[in-house]
Structures are given as C-alpha cells and as structure tokens.
Length: 117
Image 1 (cartoon, rainbow, N blue to C red):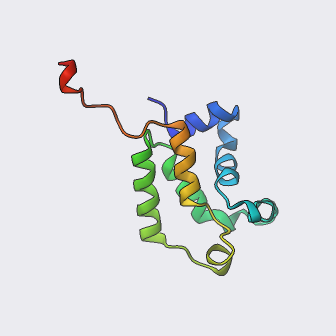
Image 2: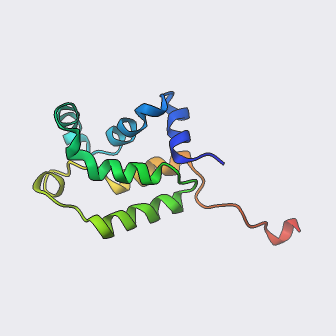
C-alpha cells in the first residue's frame, strides 16, 4: 500500500526532496500561488505550519487518514496571521483532500468482506 508521499512523487515524477513544494504549490488558492512562490524563495519559515501538515500527511495511506491529520492539525494549531486568514496564503485543506482523493483509496481495505469468506 503506497503512502501519500510515494503517490505524489510517482504521479508527478518528482524526487522525494521536492515532495513538500509539490504539495504546497498544488494545494494553495490559485490567486496567491505566485505570491507563495516568492515567499517560499525569500522566507520558507512562513510556511512552517504548512510544512508540518504536509509532513504529517506524507505517511497516510488513505483519504480518511489525510482528513484526520488535517482536522487534528487545524484543531491544535489553528490558522494564525493575516496572510493566512485573509489572503488564504496557506495550504487549503479542501485542495489537500482533493489531491489525496485522486491518489489514495478512500479507506483501508484491511477487513475482508463477508462475501469473500
């Protein structure tokens, strides 16, 4: 079973060290994506909370786990700062879930269905 990081790197043909930027750039609101690229070059610490979330979802193997990680991250960290709240200059949870849904199964298939027994 592939992890979210493996799936992202395989789908987009990127090296593992490019995973964070690949997810960040695909999960930003489009109007601020170019501004995010400039901030990334000048001050990567601005995206520390986002990188923590992206790191947390890297090991997820299904969409449900991604949703849980996003919920836990937002519950404990919140969304702080004017750029993050007003300009949406942060990872979009919805976009992250949509990306995960294109790459991972919805839920684990650990349990064998009764009809297969």
